[in-house]
Length: 187
Figure 1 (cartoon, rainbow, N blue to C red):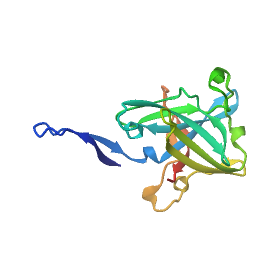
Figure 2: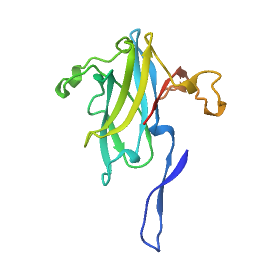
Figure 3: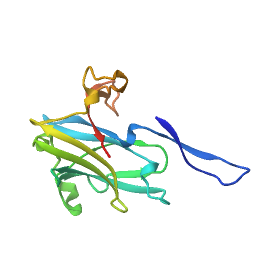
Figure 4: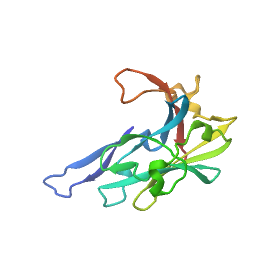
């Protein structure tokens, strides 16, 4: 992680600066499975924050598209995300079958069986106001399984770069660890 100055005052008698932590939040995301009547549904987890805002705007929205071999196969609801100025915030969301905005209430959930076709996939995170791409995570599905980042494999070297392939389940009263499939932004 690193500390970045995000602005400051030009007043010589009050030279306050604003600082923000920057780290893997812009380059990594993960999937966790949630059970829906015996069917595994993939939820994405990513972080958005003040760095993702266009110049001069205090807030914005974002949405996510999943592409398979260049074709949109799923997307989030357009009303999904809110980007606020300041630190990065963790967002967990589901993807849905392609649908029109007016059919959002009846959109089918994108399940793991929909994600089993081999090939190249891309998760695009787009800003709502100008449709600018603020993230692009690439991954592959091989033999019906998502290929996770190499750093999550046991024995990865150098061991200081190893990423534990388990995360704590959020928003529960009990401590529970679940498997996470990490993917990375290669831009």
